[in-house]
Length: 219
Image (tube, rainbow, N blue to C red; front, top):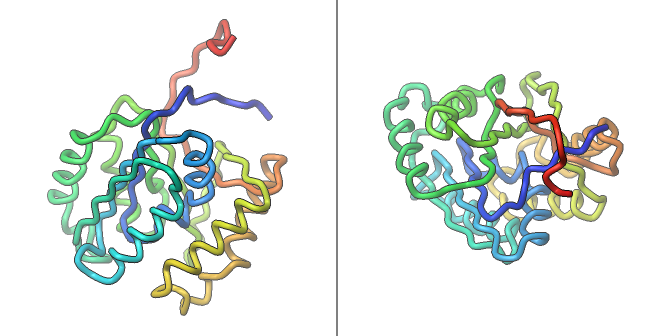
């Protein structure tokens, strides 16, 4: 397996259609990056849940997943399950968010997600972040839409278990779902770990990248 280097990170953008999307899809990566890069700027946009108890859950959860980071969170109130009908509003929200940050990497949902809200966000993100490394995270759920990822971020056992614990601790509104448990989260991260020769991992679908052959810029 070949390691790719994304460069020195000072700021990342994370986008989700719902409160908990980001934490489910890349909570372990957030923990790892926030601890490895003191003062990392994390700019978050969530499309739905604003003004509800779910917003409070999201703010507390992302604060826990980004220890020591410079974190700014925007939670909008697009109706859950109705994102395609609010295309213009989401486009405007993404444009405003794009104007407020200059991330080195953008994390969002991925285009082949079966949930219409996730898919709408994934389709619109590249229209505003045109010259960025875009990585689409996966969200485990009952639909059989698990992607075939090609980019993996390794996690150690402790980080994978901490992610599962924080999900359970902070998203109390979701624990009644039969899939929202440690077995689901650790099972998927272990599978991605097997596929990347690491204890655990989170996997991403790369939107597009330019490959340069030649001297390694890190040497």
